[in-house]
Image 1 (cartoon, rainbow, N blue to C red):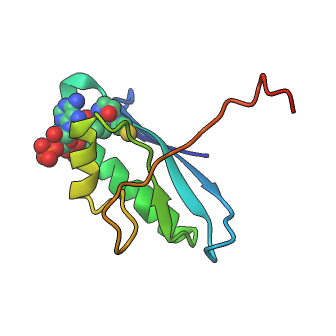
Image 2: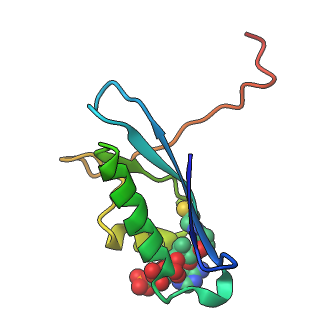
Length: 108
Ligand SMILES: CC(C)(COP(=O)(O)OP(=O)(O)OC[C@H]1O[C@@H](n2cnc3c(N)ncnc32)[C@H](O)[C@@H]1OP(=O)(O)O)[C@@H](O)C(=O)NCCC(=O)NCCS
């Protein structure tokens, strides 16, 4: 896990995890968190941290950065889309869906 901070004391954070993946030569990155203090949003801090996360991923040989976003978080979706992120596979027009299951109470 990599934590990128902006400011001292920090007013913005990006958390990035890198994992091996059979489909890519290098690691695949997941942006676990991107947060800017409410009073400081809209000044480019989020963009700067996202760009830095992309640069670190590339430096480590990564070719893919993944982000999970709530479908009704329209502002965050526009932010990521403006930065080149998409939620559709090439040639498709239906959005990808994220499935998960908490395994703590699973019977098997
Ligand atoms: C999304 C977020 C990280 C962007 O950081 P930022 O420093 O405001 O981003 P920038 O200044 O580089 O860019 C501003 C863009 O973010 C969008 N944005 C998203 N949520 C916003 C918010 N709560 N307040 C202000 N701008 C927001 C703005 O609409 C703007 O996009 P636009 O230019 O297309 O209108 C920040 O708003 C935030 O911390 N939001 C709450 C946490 C969150 O939603 N994180 C992402 C979850 S996956």
